[in-house]
Image (cartoon, rainbow, N blue to C red; front, side, top):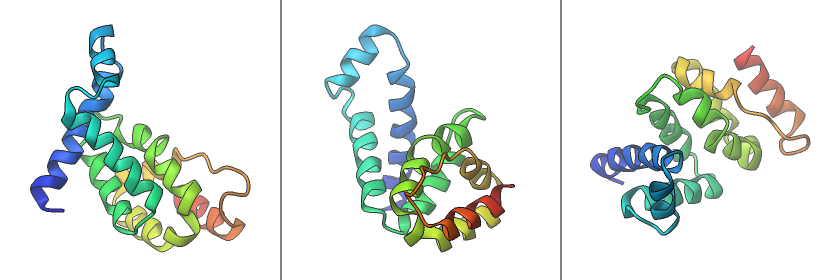
Amino acid sequence: MTSEDRARLLEHWWEHGRLSQGNREERKALANGYPPGPARAHDELSELVDEGAPKVVALLADLIDACPTDSGPSIVGTGPLEDLVNQHGDALISELETLARRRPSFRSALSSVAIEQGSITDSAASRIDDLTS
């Protein structure tokens, strides 16, 4: 993914969020895949989270920083980051720890994650807890 593609993905993902909270016409258009950029960005990020590739951790950190408001950490933390941790937290714990130590906004997002019982090992959950408490 080029830096331009990455920037576009981040921008369009936030636009998807805005449109999904918009008026009836905006929500209806979005449900029908319009505008295509935001609809694709949401699907693409969801696929990357489902795959659990290590590169998605840095992408989510950039997504937080690209938020047009101060609510990025909580929105990403309770959304795609929570999904990533619950699906792939054991495999990605090193990447999660590294970014949480380097980027306060990512650590803040990680503190918003609700870890589902049994989704990751107690060891990984404890390591995340140590980072966010």
